[in-house]
Amino acid sequence: MKTIKGIIKFGPNRVWRTYEGGKVLDSIEGKPEPNDSHFPEDWIGSVVEARNPGRDNPGEGLAIVETADGGNIPFKDLIESDPEYYLGRGGTSSMDALPLVKYLDSATRLHFQVHPTAEFSRKRLNANRGKTEAYVILATREEVPNPYIYAGFQRSPEREELKKWILDQDVDSMEKCFTPIPANPGDVFLIPGGRPHALGEGILMLEIMEASDLAVRFEFERGGFKIPEEARFMGRDIETALDVFNFDPVDDDAIDAVFRCQPKTLEEAESGSRVEELIGYDKTPCFAIRRTIVSGEINKPISEGFIGIVTEGEGTACIDGQTTKLNLWGRFFCPAGAEQLTYQSEKGMTIVECYAGKQ
Image 1 (tube, rainbow, N blue to C red):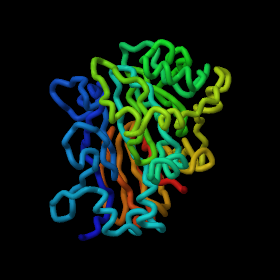
Image 2 (cartoon, rainbow, N blue to C red):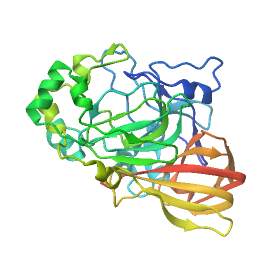
Image 3 (cartoon, helix red, strand yellow):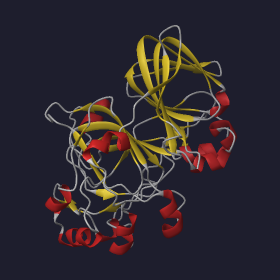
Image 4 (cartoon, rainbow, N blue to C red):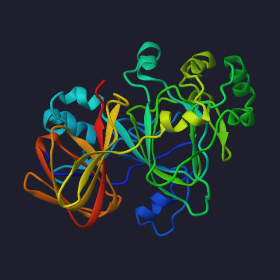
């Protein structure tokens, strides 16, 4: 397979989920009648399949790219054809650490859920990854006056108490364990594995996570859809599911320190362009997230591949002598072998860049 030189663009890759949303994603794609549906997510550069028990759709979730000869192949296969060029030193092992990046557009509050840590997954689930995740809030719906997320128990239940609530589906009691955390455009959150959480309605965000679809869904029904039993506890029993939880309370006055991330400037150019670190490896070994704000031109050395998403404005990216137009909401992959990347934008452009983990 011939190596693709240059920026690799991704098209829409909508994935079925148990909750509804996606109207904003429909609008971004230019659909004539945008609607909320069970396709509220767009998986960007995904090398992992979705876990949707009961749905017969092999390969769902895997990103597809166009090859140099006009064909189409899974992005995963392309990387495997030349891992050192695409990912940098570490090659195939780096692909195992690539994050799963999603556009997520919620029309309703998502189910209460919790994800395992990588350590738990290795010891108990025969899996290499857990599911620590990050949120970069991009926009909120006008009709939702107070967008929010839930993260961590602020008022922790006892294990047996939570077990009873889950079996009885006492959602009111579950919800009282959480304090709504305001979520507005520009906010960045990190939700470590083990911390129970839920995303509120009316939020468009980038979700960056370990590349797995492991989840304990301890609320079984939202919006009239009932989660099948095999999809609730990762195919295990309730005791295993309860072992996933971090029951340590995060008091209201500690929420921001534990979950909210503040940007840190890494580089600033004379043109006004700058590179910010949103989440670094000091916060999690699972992935890193940077944001490049382009004003005029900025040159960036490249040593590892990354997934990029244009969250504001438009411009161009140039690698290996090839210039690629980048439009608002566009998503792409920049290979490590490019070594040098130049962004240009006359009116301004912002790119969120997602890098592989260092576990």
